Length: 446
Ligand code: NAD
Image 1 (cartoon, rainbow, N blue to C red):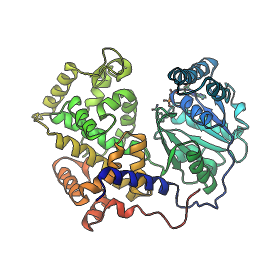
Image 2: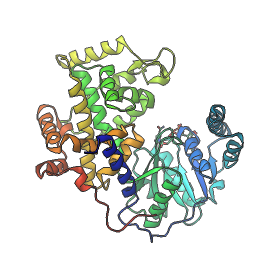
Image 3: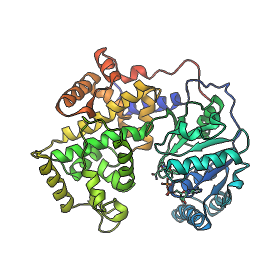
């Protein structure tokens, strides 16, 4: 019997190999040459994305809206290289070579010779459509136009161009030059050569590329939504942020949900919730707790206060009695009698929420294989590699057991727990997610 860790490692290695086998493309699909990459926006993501390509030997043109923002972006890049030089992980000569590959510009015309252009400007549909309208006028024929949007509709962005076949999402994770996951978002009109080029390029620049379809949040972020909702519901019922984070980090996650949102910014998650609330089903439980944090200006570690307080910087998270009082007051307002919540309940409710949403993504065809989801979670979300990803872990628990728990939670709680049809089907037929992890006979872009 192989120990579970080596089983998980084998599963992840196979999943990575399988991820290059994308329906509709194969080794014969033409790839477009990519030697010059344009990046629009030199903020947190744009500067990281510029380094991804410069580090891999490609020429990068980084475009900002003005000289000041460009200076900040280039400064961020220099800082990253400088830190690596100080640590001795990057030679002075190599740092200089990489920096020299990145040219900063404030005029979109500089993007005219790029083979691939990636938008990393603000997450706002009006900004994205304006940028893609301009790129459509400027980019050379055959250039690939990509957006790093976290959740916006890639098809709607492609629709403002005269060349939707050349458009797709390239969703990097923060920090882009460190995190290995790259979600490659295939739009309804993305053509095979655009996709094949992106899949091959991901591998060439050292990323784990996973092809996903268009939906709010794609794979990794969409699965986060119900997971985070469970964390909030558990807090309403009796848990505190530190209880939830302790259980999930003990399981092996790099960070629990509360610490993670404090790092990402409570305001970022607030904007996502406001967008989603517009179509929120009436019978779905919604916790206001995270909204209350934002109303109090507790936007996370950047404001020294979120679910935790941060008396001396982002690494100094401490439980905060004011947050506990806020949570208890909300339970009282809702008439919920707070109760002790076991570690087991925290773990299963958070992770089963992930697994159920993962099964829904598979059923909808947004992701091709359970292994793709596992790659997203291990390489983009800090899920412990030793457990092989959430779907592999669910197989080890047994899908009949997971499904039975989801059905019970659905009956007890709300529509957040509507069982994914695929989970029900697999549980009823005694199958596992591993049974679906089949590589199509043809395919791959090696
Ligand atoms: P940011 O605010 O740090 O940077 C955005 C940059 O774009 C700013 O420097 C701004 O000056 C520039 N910009 C805005 N409009 C522009 C224009 N018309 N032309 C040129 N530059 C322009 O934002 P960010 O966190 O880097 O996010 C950028 C994109 O990446 C968003 O779509 C976001 O959803 C996505 N994303 C963010 C993260 C994350 O963790 N921050 C992760 C994945 C994806």
